[in-house]
Length: 332
Image (cartoon, rainbow, N blue to C red; front, side, top):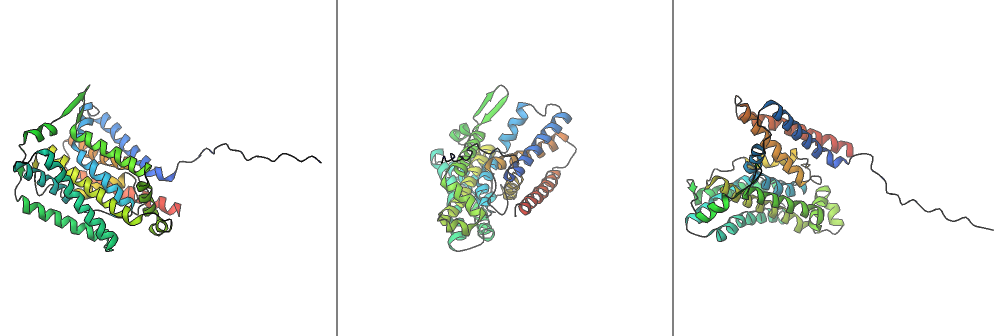
């Protein structure tokens, strides 16, 4: 009796018919950014020129770096309230050491390293002493701001020639400008993207945000990863301070007041869930560009108070938080 040949299961890959919900907030951010560009280009003359778009990146290079570091922390379900104060500390350390005669090759690692040390302290407090991230980073915020005033009660101008050459480097490509700060910020974005999506460290960051107990049961290095997430945020804050010192050519103790709120707003508007587990570095960059574009539109308008920037950011933040909540409820 002949037997029929076994039917083989089809290996044809399934084509997704619906967009993954993880990408919806980022898509929303991109749509908002595109609409703002269209409205600005229609309403204002010379709005979409290479000079304006280049300045959007040049003026916000430090905030892009802060947002990248904040993305790592928020993805784990934490928060970092110290990044604005750490940025100020980095600018003050840079200016004070350059004024003392140290070369930039020595000053730059020390300025960035100050942020790394504070980030490490945050990670240890959160992971090993079980301090809430809000409280731990709030303490770091006061510590960094206090150190700023101890080092430099007044603003310190940066007159070092070598540092000035590094800060003033600008390359022009047919009307588009690329400064050293923007180049460094884009490198940080690229490294953050690769770390989150192509390394075990990045996968563990997402796993912790999705469920820390589940990540522990899977045998993932939760403790080390959480500490490293805060180290990344602190390092990015230190580097952001260096970029701001290059931008302003000074170190000032009151620099970066409430800048941590701008970084958090950019990350949330960029689609990262405050509860952790979902988000993208590139989305955070889009969030920074949205914030910068709001300020640019208000500048072009000319008749509006600069406080309208905060009002519009607040409205957008509420909208995106509500969108995240809706998506979270639908997922559960």
